[in-house]
Image (cartoon, rainbow, N blue to C red; front, side, top):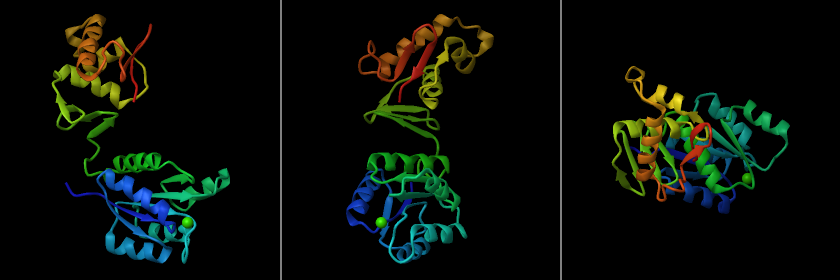
Length: 227
Ligand code: CA
């Protein structure tokens, strides 16, 4: 798989370094530009799949860089800024940024936003087919689930059940809804079937099935996936 290319435009080396470290950890090819002019040059030569763009920059500021890039490309842009006002936030979106992160920010949070945008725009090297939650990696295309890089043996039904829940984190599903989504209604499965499958699924993906980390029971309602 080709790596996704992320251009980091940031004039403060300490901030740039930490952002680069996190993005490389996530498997991206990263290039840094330390001012607005260098950013436009890198945009032409590096052809990034996503840009993390600081607002306050020497030479051209982030707003100008963003406008110029937007005039010729829809590449996702995440703005970094020390400005915190709500009006500035709206202004930020006006000139074409896809997301907006206020300094000081957590690099983990920024890395998560980068992944979310890459997934949303289909630019991720893994495409939109992989869900990651904690130790779990759920590949919709290959229909595999791994936990700490170990592949788990799920039945087709267990996989579908996990996929429905994990694709909608924190959303509570009743047993009836899960039957409608996962089972063939013509076979008229009983609600107890869901309970049985959930128990088996937990025994496979949870390190302590009696105290599930991911597959939570919502008493009197149904189940939800806790990311
Ligand atoms: Ca700056």
